[in-house]
Length: 513
Ligand code: GAP
Image (spheres, protein in one colour):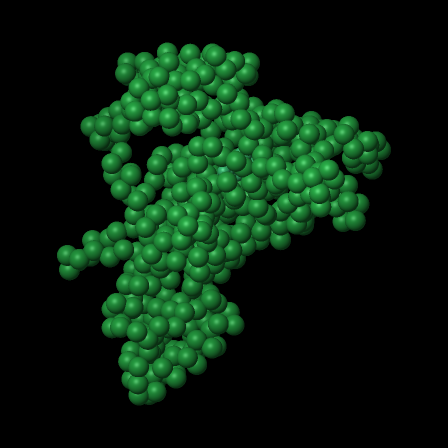
């Protein structure tokens, strides 16, 4: 645990030191759970967004994008169920005065049991080597069986109190499990209360004329209310998708873990409209496709897992999370939800407008079913950033800090250095830079010794460094150094573009899907 916390602290300080993420309004001591993306962070974030957009929109003929407004007619949120049901169950510890999400307390407790099971498995794996059979071990080891039973019972009880909205039962479950406040260590809990997460604001010049509106808590509703506009103007045939990326806002009360849970964040969502009855098939298909997208970035298959929901949201008939191994454990990165026809039907009912599709093959109209993929851009940023930050022991006994970002996502693809600040070398380096910047985001640096400049770029995540030296003036060659291997090669200036492209091109990465 201490190791995890240390690693997470390193992520936070590195994100600040290398211009990735700053606390919002830091000079006023910040605003809790609100962050700003700095000069490198904004590039990484944009590259993640573009990588998603390319894969989801531009590579699919039947998916188009929109950019709906953040403010929407307030009835939208009544129809969607957010006004009545977008709540978190909160509980306070009377001694520490700290507030927690009741469901998260229980889930974290359950996760600790799961970690113990994993530890037993890892130990046995080491002991038995190749002869180890994990399934058999899970099904026969008494410790694992006991713990698994405990986990299943917790899941069952949690689902029950959530489904029945049994707030007293929720509190009792926390007490029965012996969950104590991590700060005070006591179990002196208040009752559980529901708290709506939407931020409200008002439109209008005076208090009498003001209309209550909300900052959208998800981008999805902007897609639903535009379903027919897009279908008609784009002459879209089912199955088809509408995608968008944009800000969403939630008044998260328990906002911890840096950019993992923010009050203002960005989502990348796609709603896929399908014929009723085919939703299960499409749900499975999108689960698989989305996992492949993640795996294409090469961040380790062992760092992902599916978590099928026990408790379904009010709109879903199936739902799963793609969880990622963050520095604080496996947590939700993306959700795939089979949302049935709930949203379109609700908007039909509240707006009085038909939101139906005429299926020429079937010769009838129907309200399509929807399969949604929804990923938090900031969470994806944290997944990429934390997974990439590594400390390496070098052969000479020193360590280097290197940010091994997938090259396709790196803010700068190459840094260009003149070996010294004289003898015409800066001019040649600038010329190379001016040429490369048409194709890639590149960085120029002439300060300090070259070794120091290499280390700076390693820590900033730049995949290539290009050094111009005195030989360059004779043979039009430069030294290109690779961030991950630290290998250096002498190459012709005219070959630079192809060498960089081969490693950073979106096509090369997405073709791994
Ligand atoms: N339209 C469905 C929807 O919004 P969700 O599971 O509430 O579903 C989808 O959110 C994704 O948005 C999550 O998987 C997560 O990546 C991201 N997300 C949700 N709340 C967030 C928050 N407070 N801060 C950062 N990302 C968040």
